[in-house]
Image (cartoon, rainbow, N blue to C red):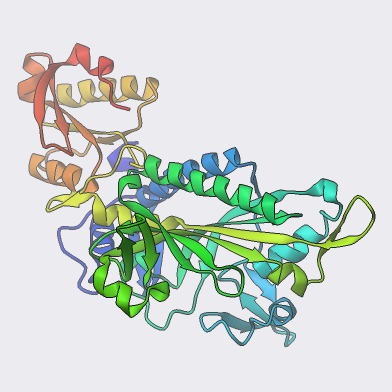
Length: 410
């Protein structure tokens, strides 16, 4: 992609109305644009990162046997009344249609997915089944804050599984746990992300959260050193809080046993081999997609800007043409095409010197956080060389132009 043809504009100024580091960086670098508190547009660069995150999640979810679909955001009030959550969920957006009918703007989808699967899966032969989606969710947060870490409108992957036995559910729950661990490893935060026991509410003794250690986190998680087990604050006694190690963390995912709470609300049963009706057991598995983008921006950054992991970077190479002579841009054009032909994702800064100087190009490279920069300049071109910068280490070396295509950049 050529910079001059891209929808991208960076800024030197920190947004005055943003206190969260992730939002500040992402806005300055042209990844997102703030529309109101807790609501952001994902610009082309930001959307590329979101797509990379989605791809990782999608691949690992598909490996669990889950099937992707897409459900509506609007849900009839009647469904929420059946589950007795219309008046108990305080973050629920409630809307009234022109005909007077009330609907919910869904923060989660048990009220839609349960009757949906009920229409298609009724025999014991239809189970187990798990469906998932990646969709915008809405929560009427009293105080949206922390940039992408807590919003009123956000992207989420939510999955729902349906089982005929508790044993089958527990086996699949373990499969989902392993899938989540693979996802966080691929995102570059596996070593910082802990499997944390949380209150299971009405459904079971425990549910589980995936918490990424960070000083910007709103959650406190506690480590029991004797069992090497993490617990969230809500299920830790005052006595344990005093003797266990606590750390700040950001919740990036969760998995919940739902038992028959929602299937019972919709009178949803399966027919067993003898023709009898039996209860259906459910599970729920969520990952905050846009929240992950936010925590990555918090964790992978320095004083100069973002430093994306290769797995989610919008481009692998930032190609800079530096100089006034046409020959520099002609050679950079060649390198750009050659890199693209090799399947390398390139953002080519082809802005001319009379408009943008070298300092601005180097600053943009550092702010954007792309892993590598290749520089073609008048000085280097005289020796048929380019310059390779590595964003993470700050290291730069001169390399023959003929060797550029042999670099292992992906």
